[in-house]
Length: 438
Image 1: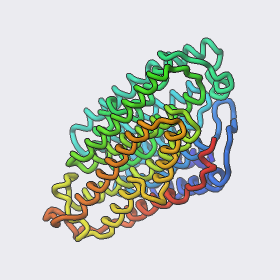
Image 2: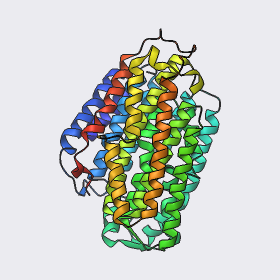
Image 3: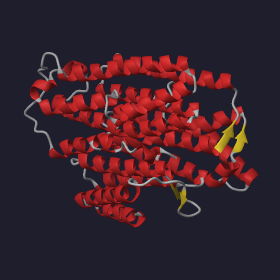
Image 4: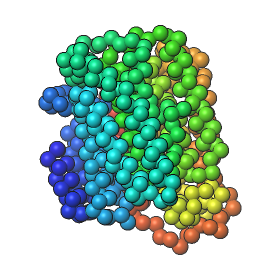
């Protein structure tokens, strides 16, 4: 598979758009056939790379996001643009499969460079420079203490290999625990250190927003899972409760922010903060049901949010504005877009029988089993607000008096419709819960 991946990168260098698309599609099919139909435990490829169920799922998601990003960026077939997309996908795959925590950190940070270039080079407005600066400042500043801590553990233990540290289950104190997780909380992001995300999404091109929401945020969740399974953190229960409560209140504030947004992309960006807060809480609870629900949420959110950004772009093409005020009544002119808006907002709010619904049920089961009844009630309120802003998103765009700014004479491109259709299938096909059990 790595040979095909390097071939794909070589074809990108030649600037062959459709050939690179075809090779990426073959990679996706190959990974699906080989990995997703069986349950994987830890499997070491060599000293530096390994394979497991969550790694295979995230690599599958990375390839999928690269596929739909290429498919929906048919109007941007420049060699440099394709090269940055391919480099970003390659860095993501290498970071997910790295068994050395230091190598993981290197690829974790290196993945910021291609997305920064995509935002600055192909963004729509002058504010993209500020958005890029925010993203780099937040993520780099938060991850520097993590690098120092990893170097310290390498000096103490002689190795920073994931499997060895997992066998040792190295104990850490409260201060080191916060250093370990802060880099990933910013990447997810946690409310309070989230300001870079809406700016980056609003200024990024379509492919940048899709990959950023679909897979880059999952690096934070994967890193959090990796550290929680590697180190034995003995944390005061009161501190953990305060951190979880702060995360839930942040999710509630992000949901309320969604209800007052007038920019479609900004609203979808804030909804990502709400969903990623569920991932943070599920992992901090550190129960088996919580970990399974967190993995499910990462995958489900990846497909749903990417599709919503694609829909926001398709709406923008017909209105030439991201404002709700100018986009109402789309259902009258473009019912097919209205149908996709209804489907993916329903998926985003977690209606049955989608993967989002399954992971939310698992999450509430984990709260109930750990006797976290107050957290159960607070998260129910968060999900109520989630339903409210998703309904607001759908009705504001598709219902009401048809806007005079809508241009129905612009034809829908088959690539956009195909990309949206491809987003729908994994949300129903990944019900086999064994692939999340690890």
